Length: 265
Ligand SMILES: Nc1nc2c(c(=O)[nH]1)N[C@H]1C(S)=C(S)[C@@H](COP(=O)(O)O)O[C@H]1N2
Ligand SMILES: [Mo]
Image (tube, rainbow, N blue to C red; front, side, top):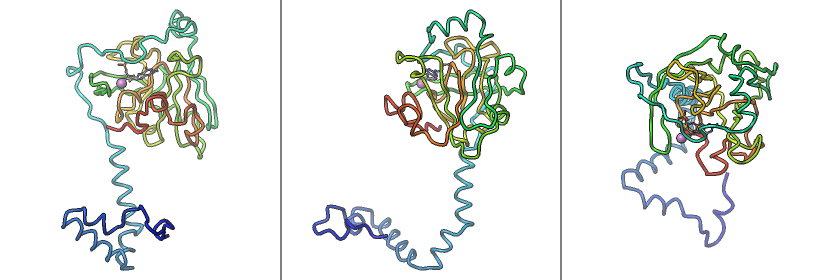
């Protein structure tokens, strides 16, 4: 479809030719050749054939499904530091902590067939995964740790995602000085949700999670930067889109500091 602005006199839009002259000669030749080929019906058909589209999609998906490197236990960092919130510090959290999190529940709701309320004991009884991975924080530090927890997939299968669910929103117990329900949150899409290394972790280096690392439960989404790994989980909400959740950008730092929602590594 032609852009009406192309026809405007003294159009401020840079012409294709002007753009081409700015490129290296070889790139320009290649582009011009592509341009000509693009007019060839057979070439276009081949380029955009179902088979090629499939190959292209498959390649991008394979990349997203690749596993993060796993390390040996003896490669672990001697100390796994805490970052961001080190203790939610609210009365509600303190009460849960005093009760050894026996009264804590993980709610799973939104676009699911069977909303769940899961205790820590129930999570401990589910199939578990253990992985030693490197955590990379945008603030410029990394640490290798061994995480134990339940694959997110297991919990989602139990809840039964609706077919219109596209994202999982992770609500946290730390309020970030914003009040209840306004604190830390994050979200991921279904490719990451069903990734085999995406787990709800309750142990670090074979010890129950410390408060600083997100007790009683935190997300591990190993192909992403640190801020996606939501700590102090209280609720997982399945949604069709993120626009109506909080600031609409899919995460606390995405909303307030312009962090990228997609933090793949
Ligand atoms: N609820 C919550 N989750 C959070 C944060 C936070 O402040 N609150 N900080 C994030 C950031 S920036 C990082 S790097 C990791 C730090 O995890 P750690 O405290 O176990 O090192 O948690 C992430 N998850
Ligand atoms: Mo971070």
